[in-house]
Amino acid sequence: MPRWLSFSLITIALFGVWGFVSTLIGKEVAPLTAQVLCTIGLLPVALILGFSRNLQKETNFGAGIAVATLTGVLGGSGNVALYKALRAGGEGSVVIPLTGMYPLVTLILARVLLKERLNRIQTLGIGLALVAIYLFSPRESLGATVTWRSAFAAWMMYGLMALVLFGVACITMKFATRYISDELSTIFYTVGYILLAIVIITAGSVQWNVSMKNWGLGVLVGLLLNGATLTLFVAYRWGKASVVTPLTALYPLVTVLLAGLILKEHFDVAKVAAIGLALLAGLALSIETQAASLLGDSPPYLPRANSPGAR
Image (cartoon, rainbow, N blue to C red; front, side, top):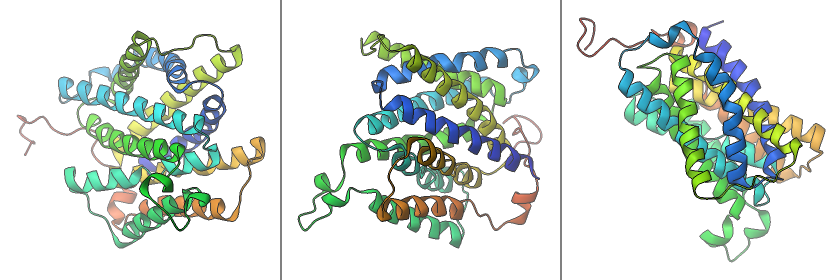
């Protein structure tokens, strides 16, 4: 099994559980407070990675650190939007698959910035994702007097915002792996979260009087997130952004199953169709026709700009 695929599957499992735990805390804790608690959970993994021997592997420390930190800020902002969507009434079994279609954004940016091409099946996946977004819209809003404001509930607007932020973060994550190691990328991804948390705390937006259970859930969210982030950095190093991103975006399947089994969330026909199309879209977007990219690993680091092998 290719290295990128192995780490992608681990990422799906970790993100799937992360999505479920995020659903639990997102219903009870204010979004900005949940984000700060999550940041605390990121710290143990980052501290352990600080002892890694791979921290010195790099082609450009400055660019890598800057991009990895930006990825953390984007990812953290996406998390806040996700929590707001859950807080505004969105069910986890719907919000998570909706935000899980962030490959739409990543694939477009990968085509423009990384010159990665889409095949016909991936193009079909984009179409399926757009249909899924429509089906995720509240059915009561889609009457004869549909307007842009009435077609989307507040939770869906926050969900779409998270979708965009997560999609952009995946591209910056791919760029970070070009310059520094996965371990150092994850550490500065955490730094980005810390910077965002400092802004939130300075603004006085944190409600510290939360229960011990929610403290524990918030820290657990951070631990799962940083573990998944590390495995995702590894997957990006060895695989294409246009392949790894849609494949790992299938994690909502794990979240939906857990939400259905444990939270007993209701599934009507439209919701089941939307979730099914979202997952099918993620699968289609992950299909790459070039066998070489599927079966072989890519070089872990790009050459320096001034090195003999650089173009």
